[in-house]
Image 1 (tube, one colour):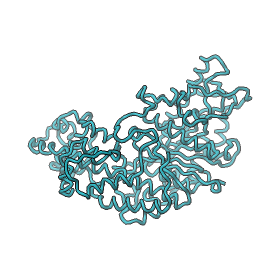
Image 2 (image 1 turned 180 degrees about the vertical axis):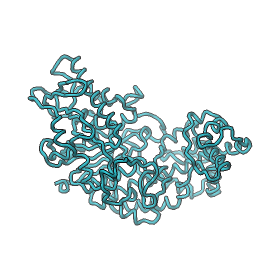
Image 3 (image 1 turned 45 degrees about the vertical axis):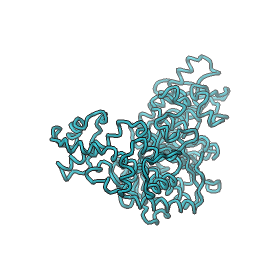
Image 4 (image 1 turned 60 degrees about the vertical axis):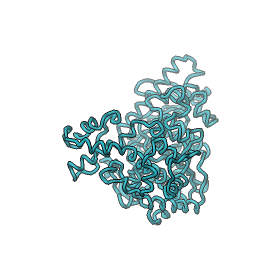
Length: 577
């Protein structure tokens, strides 16, 4: 399940190879496909590469260039050794992305087995955890939740902090489904409001199920306390104690809103309402053994439910208690507790910030980090990348205490020549290679969208030389339109007239190069996993430099959830004491 552990020397050697490869082909990873015509990107390739790639069909590009699992490659022409070396190195140096039981790259858009019966409902989750949750997220919360539960059991810790918790889908599964004591922190108050609303809906559903059953000995029940939701922005420049303070506000008020606990006369039964027979709970084997059995009154705005476990109501989003105010493995005393830190697709610098909190904060025992949005990571060259969220209230609540960047984190990578990663290279690392492979194999009409946008860019620059790479709002089903129809809809979105005269001869000449556009973009995509590997390896080396071992798990089905690598680190017992 885990990527094979690397020694410190192996990690450093791999980082050297990755930076060397990316430095050599930086002109490819840093290029924008929409500038294919305006910057003559095809002419930047060696002539021998142009000859090898220029006439390939999309399925041939998939087999010969992108799919690392292809065994029998049949070349229509002799490829230059430099191109073969690039492909081999890119495939060999990247972390494996195939999850146990997951699909191979060549299956394209195939869905995980749990969705074979119903493509919108995971068979591994009960209905109360599927409500409001898209299939991709169902798959992710089931897999990550099960992993977090296993790690909690191993660390003898039941408190979890979910950072960037959004609408609370993961927090609900961890708490109601797996019996953990969970606090979610989310910067967007609207999402926190939705999370508390969904918590109440879940409790109301449980109440109705209990009433229908009419049998107190077999009531459907939630095994753990309701998650607590905190509105807060995790400032990457703030120290870990500020983060702990964010989590631990209004402890006494949170205590006062907790339901009173009655006598424990009934055995708790976690029934199929929550986790279906062959569910994540089954996969984790005995995740739900020995859960609390107290009978507790549950007060919500909608109803009063009685269930057979400790369940606390979701309170005000800005007034929630976390594990900070309780001791290790005992959420009753007033002492900072240890907890597991998790983030499901924590954006940009948030993932690197959580890793720093793990190394510095004595209360964090374990971390599971699933990163995304690498282009939003801060670097020395670009300390404030575009699109980074920063709430207006952040300056009033947090005092900056450091000036560390999201990449590189490790001293080793920082010292390597050519380690720099541009915004474009990091943005490219977020692309889904499995999805594009599927398009290539199917010769999908979607492949023409890059060509359309590249032609549009050349038209825009001819009319407005000062306008470079303007944002063009997505034209729905652009691939199903003729280029003239696409241009008529797209041009007004950059302030140009819809009836701008087009040179049909010039447009047709560019359309004839669609295959080359696809081939060039495939070269860019070939380097995307290399960039992602370097970013994640840098984080592993950072942890190593701080004295902590870590491993990567390709946890999700990459064809279904492209950012599927989970970085896991556990503090040794002596560091936890």
